[in-house]
Image (cartoon, rainbow, N blue to C red):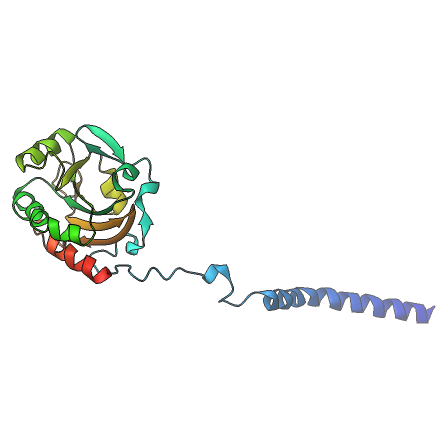
Length: 224
């Protein structure tokens, strides 16, 4: 009997040791089964595209990673009173899309004229469409286009971002503290078949430098 009790005690002691050690054993087994960092999808952070633009003016726009703008079917731009999807405007086109904060002097005398002057050069570089996006009332945008002799849209197509959805989508909304509503920063983008490739944003809406046609010409040349 004494021998049986001793054997039973040893058996219980061994079971207790096994139970107390099992969490550590399980932990070690789990650790050894983990994939290396390079093999773990958690570490597979995209490095971005070779032509991604990481300039300080553009970093706030999703690091300018390429994205297909046409996937946002809810975002519409108004052309001569008709709302159009981004796919309708940009699919199958290599386009330059530039945005203006208003229809003021800098826009009318510097920004838009730069694209009129360099339009032929842009087309030789493969650009098939130039869009000018103005946030606000479509009637005001149409009136401004008529004033600049752009009503037919053959050289520059003026479109209205009525509720600012497109501007917010690009991340170039400018909300001035004393302004009655949100406006757009002054920017220009290169879009190929609906895919955003490059964006240039001016540091101040009062200047048209980084987003000028000359700047975009150099951007496109550098991409070739």
